[in-house]
Image 1 (cartoon, rainbow, N blue to C red):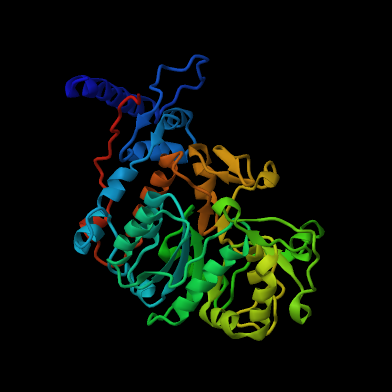
Image 2 (tube, rainbow, N blue to C red):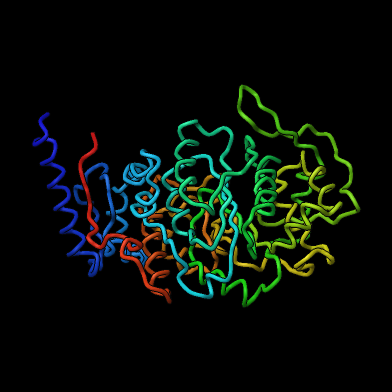
Length: 429
């Protein structure tokens, strides 16, 4: 097929979608027709119009219809900037990283981030540039199982920023296994021994995305949790006790790392610790991190956790309930708006259902979840993937706009995302 013949249908699709957006998103018809219009099977979308994102945030049905056909992400555009290493000023500029503090308050309050990644490379770049500011510090744990090309691209990006580094030790991470906890510990050691001074550390994975800006995160910490750790959780419920009372060793059958119970009962927790159950995500003071790395109880608890299931959901909250731990919150419960997650078992009570799909009992968000996400008081949301690229792209555009509106310092033009957003539509074959 000639280039002209290949391009013409795509142009028609682009024009049709743009007309639909302009005419119907602002004033959708009151009644949905039973017969759907003849949309293309899949549309490859580049940057997305702010009008479409705004309509998705408002939950408009017409926008959701269009979003169903935007399945192919513009990841190639993001990753293209990283294919030629060495020109860091170009990489920083073209990927639209914010390279100066946006206010004096933010410049004087440094956050450390631990980000564990193993897939979705373009989404990792979107996450990193959303949370990046030069006064913060970032430790990236790349799963040892990740492909060599993946690691190379991450290294290319990291090499361009003094305050971003890859952890000195890497683990082959197993879902619900000890290595997931170990990855955070590796980064904590590197952060404590780095030259950077930071106030709090926040852990993320590559499928997270911020709901709040850097300034809003700082305000939240200072207003409600000043010098305190945030580890949402409660005393271990009876239905989770088998996760810690029985041994769940990691194994690597056929090269895949996994965990499985062997029906052997474990010894009681060291130092007669009361085990708590909570979130794997946290906001921790630097002094608490130093305590975790040096205190005998913390070290013994870490060793004891090597063969329990999901130790990261017990370790942080248990240590933070010790009354003599720095920044401890011994009487806390689930409070602490760290992460917005739609759990399957909370459907109908906490949320109105997953508009994307459930995976491991949590929602992988779809465009229909956007109104719920932006109403959440949480700092970050989880889980996202590239199946519905509009979800992260719309959140990213909204997040950057909020951050720049809050800025008290001059804003560089290249920090803004392009306003001449467009669909680059073509039929998939």
